[in-house]
Length: 469
Ligand code: HEM
Ligand code: 2DC
Image 1: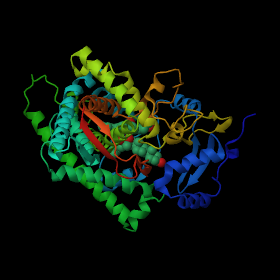
Image 2 (image 1 turned 90 degrees about the vertical axis):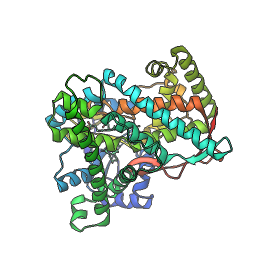
Image 3 (image 1 turned 30 degrees about the vertical axis):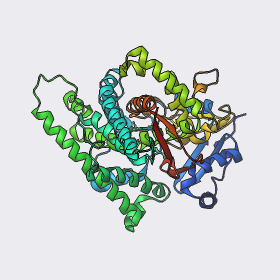
Image 4 (image 1 turned 180 degrees about the vertical axis):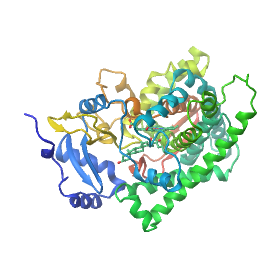
């Protein structure tokens, strides 16, 4: 028999018990482990209320499938209130990330053509490849400077610069020059602001931003300052492209980036284009860079996997004579490696949808309008869902193991990650060239833990050694 919504397990009746457990278990920074232990305690479904958020949490791929298949034409995820509060405060428009309903769908369909379609991805490949080759050169230089045939470093900031340079080359058709020149204060400020923006969001997930604003708390002020920098730097880039676009001759057919393409299409009001371009620019920094860092960390831990990937890449290189577009089609194991990284190290701790109709999950009735979360981090580490989940094993995605609704790192359906194709192409090209040029090693094999700063990131610096192959 069907069980009622109010029969769901979990401490949802007493808001304060959850707040207390939350605090006792290392608080917000430990969100991912807390969800993991909740699934251990309550089973595959539980209800929870922390602060102002009331949610139902699920972990099984089959339940995720039910949720996503019923999402309808206007899927909505949990609203990140501080991000909306900033835009309301500064009277800025919402972009595709924060919009909902018809307006979201209109923008999203236009943007899909500009950043998700296969034809457009083809245009991105040479732009991204150029940035990757510059990154490879800087690593070679660092190795030469070291005088020991090895460069040992925490690559975080170099990867941030690489990711920002990559996304800007695509958006604006222009190089910022972050990899050649040693210091670019404006871009470094942008990079630091995106990190601070994420960091200062987390406490506000549980305390209403309106309240923090009214008491002028430091967290709200940091958050505003971070977004101010993000918006003003993005605006500088947008204005520059905008001026060049109007200087361009009408019969210039060459592809010159996403922004120029959107201006040429003339399907969206300028304000809306600006809002979404700003989101893409900010969304393009910490996500791909941290996923690449985790990938290199796992490949240092699993040298055999690294060797298998390198063999695949060398073979693909011979077969295609190094043509990047063709190479991207000949590296299935490398693609599986990215799925494997996101399984163990997802950017998003969870995926969420408001139910669009009544659904049944684990034999519980879930009413329309309920916020349901898929515990992505917990799913990736569950031994009933993945065989030997602690092992970094890209092969699992190409073998007999079940993959149904398990590759969810970028979300699902029409509201999935808008930067997905950019991110995948950028990361594949990066790994193709890096693995052809360098061996990745660590001197001390220390387990690096994860921390939640809105996105999941390494808790401590990851030191890697890069050596010429
Ligand atoms: C949304 C993951 C990189 C821009 C999302 C979502 C996830 C995600 C899980 C929510 C999807 C859903 O609710 O179904 C990732 C991962 C990345 C990545 C794992 C890299 C490894 C990027 C990049 C950009 C970007 C590079 C920008 C260039 C966005 C935007 C949305 C989004 C704009 C909101 C889309 C909408 O609401 O319609 N991402 N992301 N992401 N991401 Fe990404
Ligand atoms: C954070 O409980 C935890 O891709 C919350 O590139 C629920 C939640 C809601 C939305 C998620 C967010 C989590 C993590 C970061 C995500 C975000 C949607 C988009 C965003 C997953 C899981 C991200 C990183 C975008 C950010 C673009 C922004 C900088 C303009």
